[in-house]
Length: 198
Image (cartoon, rainbow, N blue to C red; front, side):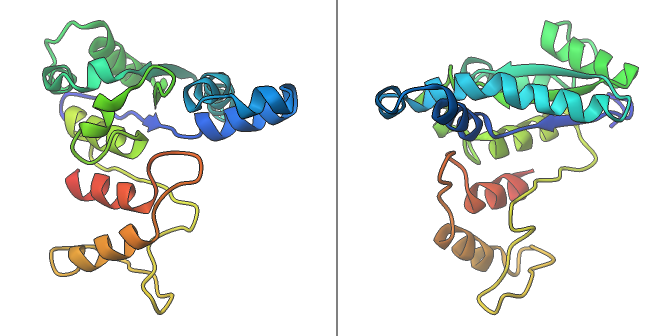
């Protein structure tokens, strides 16, 4: 958009899954059994941000990281202000300055700090929903959401290449039947809803 120069914002998932993996490596079975998802997210967050930072550093690109909390997300004014050039809030200003300097901003919903209010947001409270909200707020030219399977496939195993008003109901039905992430709160339906909302 006219408000931001060419820049990249990455909204990442993976803190809970990474934290569970770390727990298996470093904690006793008893400690693993009592580990909450928020604790797992706390264990995994630094590793996830570190992996992104290293991936961009390998390509000579600087990356900054920001965990975002539900307190910020449920304030719609906060999201609207991100695209306001005169907004002087620390986060909005930093996003703009990062884009102008060629710094990639890595954002993650701070699962360790989140609670039920996040799940009440339109198009979900997971990182897919967060990506959709941020893309709208900054006037992004495009939003790309990645999935392990590489897309949405119909019952005949054919890739659905375009989702529009003619097939959104069918796509939502397919996504709903195949959702529920083993480690997160999103899944395929979250990705469909977030993309459609954006």
